[in-house]
Image (cartoon, rainbow, N blue to C red):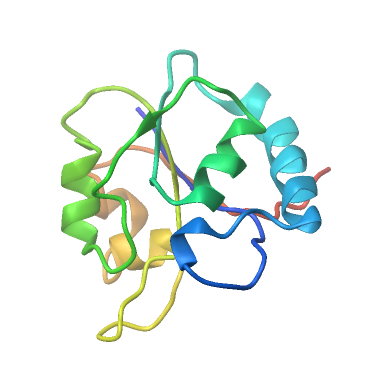
Length: 140
């Protein structure tokens, strides 16, 4: 089972934050990432998405078949995120499309760093492979 974390693509500046649409650059990023990710996704991957507009617009470049998970919000703790997506107990590969999680109490950082700070990837998930994927991959 895999846990794949994808931060939403570039969004326009503005408020309310959750309603910001993707910028033209963001649409290009989302399509490039989808092109790269599509052949690499394990068959049967469950796709979970934050309710924020930029995350939903990002994932639509890949598929229209996804689940919106209200608990995937800015400021959610790593434990709350893992519980919301039922990982690793769910037994399926997961693609989680979210926002860069941070709050006033914790500075911005990447999903993998925030979720597994202080442990190697294999230690953090009991030996399961984790494939962290950013919004702007180097395509080769």
